[in-house]
Image (cartoon, one colour):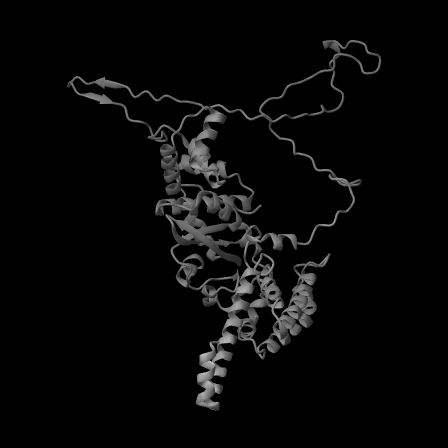
Length: 471
């Protein structure tokens, strides 16, 4: 503070000094709050926020708990039940091998002694045949008696372009696997000796995207009937402009959507105006249109928020540490060996005292002097019902980990491709990610389904459903 300001206030009298001190105290409090906020931001990591582990600082990475060595050698341990590759029921070729000499006396064994004893010992070898099959369609031209020439048309099922359904499906499969356009062109050349330009590849992807509109819509409608589904979102750039990629995932299907804004309209377009079943989400405000009785707040997100709260000073930190301990005990109950996930009555009994402890601590937090701590605790109490939906409804997970895992692949794609450039590109990404994740959840081969769907489209047949009946 400048000396002349102090002298001026001193000369003006006691009231002026009080005003000056009050202004300075208010300024100091504001600066202290700003410093605390900056320290909080600097201290953010994957442990106390939604930042991915890849964004952790070197200090945060060094603080990660080290995995203790068991002292055992790598690989299967003594007594471990081995796992073996399943034999193919219908191999393409069967080659018989007969012994040439006796293992006992060494005598030669001729053809007249080739009498099988027991079942043969099968040894299967898998091989990839990388060969492109080229079919030349010769369109014949003939002249009529009237003098006009007629050219034969291509029959149904023959692509207008130079590449068949298998090539288009392979291009889409590689693109869904985060392989870029130029690298896909190179893979086609290296593996199959197939020459294709990036422009032709893009054209194949756009055609495939149009074909996938039918199964994409099928999944969108089927999700409306899912008893439990999760939802999450991440940023997605389009031509340098920020957009948002969201996912809705159920037990056997998932759907991705790119929207311009991360708002309630986008959430309703993904989940429906009045979603059925239970929706598992984080505490982001766009999901508030879902009733708390039909919503499960992710406890994994809450655990990170509580760690951040525990790192504050004073009463806020003490409340945060106490809440973290109680929530940790909730996870201990959930992951207890031998717990029957179908027995909700027992689950409610085991969690009831922990739930009461968490409620009491949150109520205590609403009386805390720190305004951020008060708002945090008040917000949780306002939606407390949604914290424990997993104890009331069978099949509801306590976390939104399934949605986060589904988004992880898209996040890696965003980092390598820098998003998309056009709306057409958005639709390609949405549909390929949707089909990739859905086929994976059902144990289906993506390339096989894409080939079938594209072939059906070429022949004018209905595109087969992607949601196979559960076995």
